[in-house]
Amino acid sequence: MELETTLLPFSSQTFTRLWPGKQQLATVLQSEAVRTPRLRRRIVLICLVIFLAAIGVRLFHWQDNRAVLPKLFTGMVEIHKSNALLLAKGDIATFITGPAPPGDANILSYPPGYPIIMAIIFKVFGESDSSMRLFQIICDAGAAVLLFFIAAELLPVKVAAIAGLLAALSPQLAYYSLILIPDSLATLPILLAIYFIIRAKKSNSFRAVVAAGALVGISCWLRSNALMLTPFLAVLLLVIMERGPRLRYAAALVAAGILVIAPITIRNLVVFHHFIPLSLGVGQMLNVGIGDYDKERRFGLPGTDIETVTSEAEKYYRPEYARSLFGGNGIEREQQRTARALAVVRAHPVWFSGVVLRRAASMLRLERVHRIETTPGVNSNLAVAETSQPVWARASADLVGPGLSVQTQTNISLSMDGQALVVDSDAPNLGYQIVSLPIAVEKNTDYLLRVPVNVEQGNVVIQVMNADQTQRYGSTPVLSPLERLKPYEQSLDMHQIAFVSRNTQQIFLRLDNAGRRGGKTAVRLGRLELFRLGPASFLWTSYIRAVVHTAQLFFISAWTLPLALMGIALALLAGRRDVILILLAVPAYYLCFQSFLHTEYRYVLAAQSFLYVMAGITLYLAGLGIARVLLRK
Image 1 (cartoon, rainbow, N blue to C red):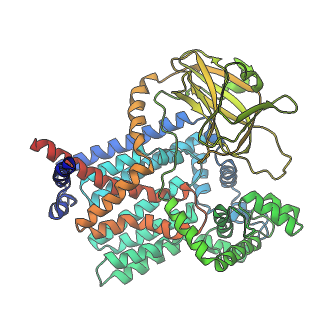
Image 2: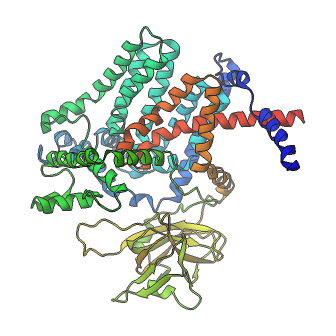
Image 3: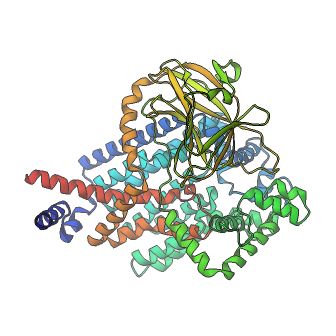
């Protein structure tokens, strides 16, 4: 008891030293309004560091995931590519209307902006995934710099620098910038719109308001998630702008956004005879969103795209419905999906309200993605494996034998044809299921491992590890059961793991249960092949990678979210209400609107950047407090 009473004054004194009082906070969190030549030079240097750091981190992630990236969102990527190629070939009519309107409405699956950008990149730099990824990397690095300018307009430059660096180092933002989908690109115009809103507030500029509305419209050309963002930001203007012009500014913001997306809406009305502002999919999203939380399937709604189309094909005796979501009376089918989902919402409003709240809470969590590796990834040409013989090949059954490490409650056996290894596990906890016998490799060499896999139940990751299981050299993404149109399609799906052997001559394959709470896992593994691609390169980057690898430990919800919440509280204590309203506008929009539908982490990428600004406030003030304590000592 005496120890506790002794420590209480000490802790309160320490806290007081670390965090300044309200008046001090108000002074400390003011932005540098006067930009001296010295400050401008510092800003240029900070922007250069943020941009280069963002480029470097994304290139490292690209190098680490070269074998995995072509396997991600393949169906969606193929749709965007095929539409881009229509433009590149000059077939503008088909790009606008689709092959057979109005019955075939697949062209309305996504807004047309991303294929337009892709067609331009292909036309200028050739039809190459690499050129598109480089373009997205540059845009995402530019978004990190833009976040710095947004924060610098509202807060001290050091807070802005921290926010920009967090965006540059973020493994989540880096990962999605490498996938050929529009989600990361759609963030850039939204950030730019917020910057213009800040400029409009500071300079009372009507042009800045119009520019902000137009930029939100441009984002909608890429992804339709921001469709209602202009009315939401108009409410923000009503709160933060002066009483006189605020109604006119709010109306101009909404009007600018409507005018930009109007060509898409007019196309949809003329060609498909329905008022569709941007794209189809709300009904399907509602269905899948309800299915995410309807574990007992009480409402009878399909929970996946494949289940949707197959059930509709059976219900309406139209086999062609099973080929796509919006082909063959696609608009009418989508309207029926919406009606069925809304009927569930009306019948169970309390349950659905709980779903909305839980989904909103889940949107605040950062997605778990791999940090960059501490040693360079494979830089050799992966296509070499297509023309060369494997240096090692085994039936998966040959990997087992005396000394095989098998998790408790895991059973291994051979398939009926003897060609595949069957792994069944009912492990209650996360962790490995089996670890193979050793495989010989050369040191510091690039390799590609081909693993045929069929996941029948659960979620698994196959990893290449060292002997004591402390280092991961490479892995597949999380593998889950694939949706198949036909139940009897049981072929193994080929996955590739590119890795560098580093300073080892033996590797081990480990199959991990990747579910959140463990549970039943059923996997089949086929014949494995290992290809030697060549000697490892860029080994000197290991030192830089080690620093970034450690820094990326920060990017988990347990760190970022509490720091962001603390930053909000500190800014409000400092009387910076308008600052917080501006920074929270985009996250609040997604929490309010996207939470009614099915959501994935990539849908809310634009919200994450603003959390970094608020976390930057906390880190900045903590740094000032620590420096104050050290100087007094």
